[in-house]
Length: 364
Image (cartoon, rainbow, N blue to C red; front, side, top):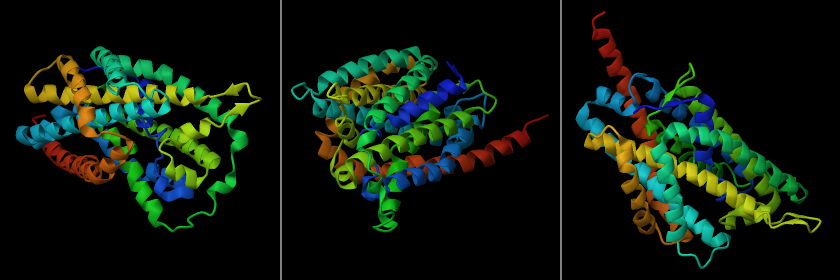
């Protein structure tokens, strides 16, 4: 089952996926006042790898990326790579659900058991995954405008709190924190776009996956840059460093004549929408990978058990916000370095050589 996705709808889905979690957490906070510079650098340095992801999808248009890898690497190696990416997509899904649980608790539902919001999110995600990536992208193309409009409206109200001196002095602590923050932002969220290769979609546009991947990456980067820069200008670099949810803290300062207050609900709404899209994309990618491994052509049979494994997976992953950050630094960094950078580049080089050789050997 190969679904067809319009370019604009694919871009919208990738934008919401990359925004999932990154717009509420203090990403790039290692750089302090230079966080805006970190976002720009991470966006630019991620582009070559995004192009590689798109090339792997477009390398053999009549096949999805799993079949392309099998033709290029052989079945045993392709099976091992698929197993790794199926596991990685599940882990990112677990992390997304776990982060949403922690945010919901901090945002106000303190007494709510973590399993309740996780179960609600996963049930909606199951429905979205069963309907397929084509339906999800059409839904995302509508809600992207809702998310962008809500973001703009919320931050227009907070403009009176903006202090541009919070961006100064530039590079006061040198290039080191900027380099560390750039690597961190490349890993999360920008190069998580590697998961988008495995949703199995064909694209209606002439450019194939390239305009979708690059367009989604740039729009997501610009949106994240806008939100993070406004947040930094409102709360300041020191507060930005110590807050787990600085965007939530920035919007909580809105008070327009004592009438428009407590607009943190807008941040919660945006986060829930983006978390839903990210979780759904990860679930579809994981289901496609695992269905390939067991030889099942219809991936929707695996959607429900894989989604429900998230109930257990989120508790296994971490027990709280502090542990999430520790795991991100100690465990995820080397894993993501391999699956986002080293492995795709290796597969791309091998695929270009071997598939080109097969085309030359094929009879005219």
